[in-house]
Image (cartoon, rainbow, N blue to C red; front, side, top):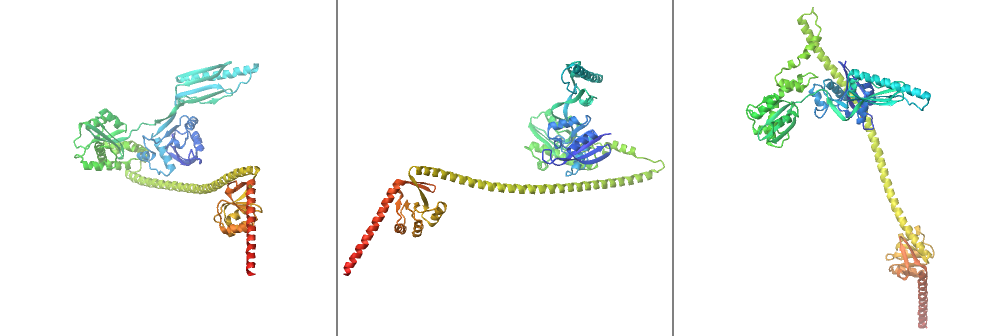
Amino acid sequence: MSCIFGVDIIKGSIHGKRKPSYAVFILKDENTSEKIVSKSKLFRMVRQYKPDIVSFDSISEVFGSKEELIKFLKEIPSKTKLVQVSSVERGSLPYLSKRYGLKIDLRNPMDEAKASAYLASFGIGDEVSMFVDKTIITVSRNRSLGKGGWRQNKYRRRVHDSVRQIYREIKRKLDELGLEYEEEVRKGYGGISKGILIVHADKTTIPINSFKTRDVQVKVEAVEKDRIEYIPLKTTKMHTIVGVDPGTTTAIAILDLNGNLLGVKSQKNWKLHNVIDYILSFGKPVVIATDKSTPPDYVLKIKAAFNAILYTPKEDISVEKKKNLASHYKFVNDHERDAIAAAKDAFNSHKNKLMSIEKRIPAGFDSDKIKAEILKGVPLKDLLEKKEEVAKKEKVVHEEITKEDIARREKLIRELEEENQILRTKIAELKNEIERLRSKIVSLSREEHERVRKDNYIRSLEAEMAELRRTLKEKDKTIEELNARIEVLKRMKLLEFSGWKGVKVLRKFTKDEIERVDKEYGINENDIIYIEDSSGGGKLSAEMICSKRVKAVIVQNEMSHLAQSVFDENEIPIIYANEVEIESGDGIAVINAKMFNEVLNKKLEEMNRRKVDMVEKLFLEYKSKRQFRQ
């Protein structure tokens, strides 16, 4: 009884956060079953069922690393083969399924698992090999012997003797089997502490498994290869149609039996044996084609080399027709175009026949091989004869039933079986589709919900991050400004200790600026005000400063006459910056107190003098007016 597992991944990824699940199709003789399992459950099933083959579309869907693959191959039964069905040379799973008459739904993982199992049963695929034909058998102690002593030495002797006995027994079995081996022995007190046998044979051919006793352990391990090797279950060559355009520059075009271009090449003075090697690199040619109605000798030589069918058109193919035949393919010169046209014309002449054959080939037969044989003239009936003979033997014939009854009943049975099979297939397809859609709905719902939640969370974090960055930028700017102000204040403070005096600074002579300084620093009685730009100030601004009863006003430039008159009326001196020694920066200023007091006293004396002069002037005017009246 043979047992084959077909496996395909359903969802998840071996490299992602979501653990993958797998569709498993079990083919056991004529019985089949289906399961959906996790990765760990899949590995347990392999150890439990011990199948002959575990087949995959690609092993990368299951094993994330070489180490994981090696561990799996060591754990599974020695008779179980790990098979990868598809490959670059052989083709994809859908292509192989079509080639061997299997109908699969590419959206249904269970269908792909089923195809993998049946293709492996047909001998299609590569066995994944990680071990060379060598096996290491290690026989050693199963426990630590501890410290010395009379009793301990007796125990050590017993253990080493047990290791020696089992080692000799294994050697005896290997000798009986006629297997070659190399040995390495480490002697111990009373026997052997460790013995290693390197057997020149595959692990599957050695009837010895790893085991342990109370005192001894035996390990049987295959020797690993440097890289993964893929060994074909059976050698199958693709059948091809070859178009040849001979001459000084020879061109070869190769199509498969479905009309797909596999390769095209042209070369000047191309040797015949090199041309043959090039053709063989793509498979076995069934038809050798030329665009000439009378085949050139060079084409006949190639045809004879492969014992293939020769195709020639009824008349030479015109240039216009060549262009049309090769229009869907890529080529670099007219020689390659002519070779493609010859191959395509040969394919078109057999196309309907090939398509008709494909529909009549049962599952399990290599459609390419059947097509190739039929093109050579072998009837399809003869190719399928063996299967029909087996089917006839399985029929139970009752002697009392007439031939007419048998024929009628057989016809009815065939019709009912066909209808039953169609309905069963349809029901299975519908069930699989319903299950797939349900799983997809649940998966999409979860994925969409998770995606929306993640997107919203990410957007929230990004907005919060942007706001924090903006705040941080503002804070950094404020810190820089404050640090600069601190440096200025430090400098001003040092100047104050050296006999300088602090001054309140107005950048502009405006109401808003006066209110700002008063709010931030306060403008108090006897303060000194320094106005950096006094050109815009008027009567109202001057009255606001005078109301604070400041000691003096220092200005950088001229102010309006109205403002000056207000300060004069309130007996507040106006001092120009070039008259005193002043240092300013970042809204803060200090002046040399000694120099300022000297200038202030002069200004106050000038104001008093002007006031006295004005009084004397008024008195003299009054006096003159009285004399005039008398």
